[in-house]
Amino acid sequence: KNLTSAQVRQMFLDFFKEKGHAVEPSASLVPNEDPTLLWINSGVATLKKYFDGRVVPANPRITNAQKSIRTNDITNVGYTARHHTFFEMLGNFSIGDYFKEEAIDFAWEFLTGEKWIGFDPEKLSVTVHPEDEEAYKLWSEKIGLPEERIIRIEENFWDIGEGPSGPNTEIFYDRGESYGNDPEDPELYPGGENERYLEIWNLVFSQFNHNPDDTYTPLPKKNIDTGMGLERLVSVIQGTKTNFETDLFLPIIQATEKFANTTYHTSVSADVSFKVIADHIRTVTFAVSDGALPSNEGRGYVLRRLLRRAVRYAKQIGIEKPFMYELVPTVAAIMEAFYPEVKQKQEFIQNVIKTEEERFHETLQEGLQILNSVVEKEKANGSTIFPGEEVFRLYDTYGFPKELTEEYVAEAGFTIDEAGFETEMEKQRDRARNARQKVDSMQIQDGVLASITEESQFVGYDQLAVTTTIST
Ligand code: ATP
Ligand code: MG
Ligand code: MG
Ligand code: MG
Image (tube, rainbow, N blue to C red; front, side):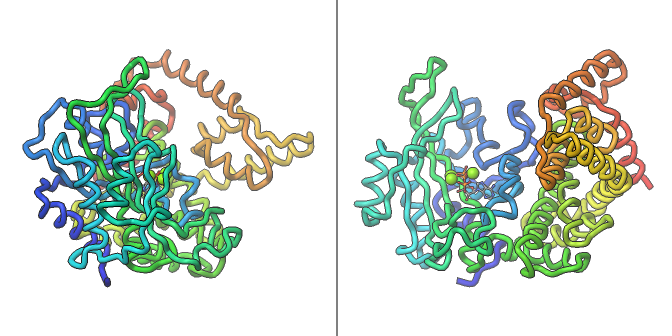
């Protein structure tokens, strides 16, 4: 079928609406009531209040397309076909209403139904937990999947510590032999992973309570929580090699080409740059749209790190000046149908990003010189460890996120002295603690943020810089 990403997203919501689900809007990426979470990282993250029983939903069946950020996948981005730091999770949820049978039926009907996505059923295989006979039976007897396409794996148990937990079942799409011929081929697999069988959908059956003493007891009310990556689903539908050639990313890559000294699909390493940039600009654009700002701690630090990382990859394709902010209108246009607010805030978002890019470029050259001279000096001493104090100096004075320094020096075969860096950070925290009186500006964010790291020189300056840009 020929479907745009916007049509796929809408089709998912329409399908579950037809099955009696209430359609919830995509909530802010910044969690508003969950101090344990830096970013919303899945569809269920915004529905915790229903899952833990604090609030009873008007309708126990819910569906959403939820903006999500997962920074733990950052090193995969650009190297695997399927990982992003920002992605949309399509989900259907049952709060004590339907359970395994309907959840599996719904997923199957949506993916293979003629009226819906219409995948060839032969291309789908699933994994189940080895002890989940019920799920196995449903797939084999009810759906009719042959044995060899129902794989039992131990990892299929969703457990985040105390609270609801349970087995899950995942659906994979077989993209064909051309994806499986040579997992060593860097052209196909720069991330070193064979992605012939692409995980598209995860159905979680939360049926146990994980008790404080690490025992499990059955939940009185069983829940369903599912999540399917829109980008992956669209890549299968649009028949692209990776998520990055879908209509969700390609226009961003094309906009980036205008600034670069090379084009997409010229070399594996240039492609990684284009992909990282396209990924990171979506994340930063949506995060800023939802109220986060670059800074030196918590969420703001993540944004700073993403932008500076994108700048580093951009240098490798010949981009030496601020340009990320010029990609924002493309992101806004791609997402406009479902997220009109991004277009509405476009100018603000561009200002924030431009300011951050300019500041980074100002100090980048100097910082790199220092970085290189330290590398040379250590090399001469026969060391391949980049000292912690220098990591800190680059961080504190030149705005190099620790991870960025780590990536730069890795190119020279160096690792960073993590412990030394932490010691310097701790000293900095002590200094900040002593000078605390004036720092109540932190309260503009929530308690988590405040507890992550302390105020640093950059924060005040940043907020000032951003405010000035906006008001002029
Ligand atoms: P993978 O094994 O591919 O890393 P996962 O098992 O970690 O995925 P889940 O936590 O099960 O992912 O999330 C549910 C669905 O959300 C996945 O099946 C996938 O479609 C999508 N998804 C998860 N992480 C990402 C990501 N970083 N980028 C894009 N989509 C993702
Ligand atoms: Mg993962
Ligand atoms: Mg997985
Ligand atoms: Mg999974």
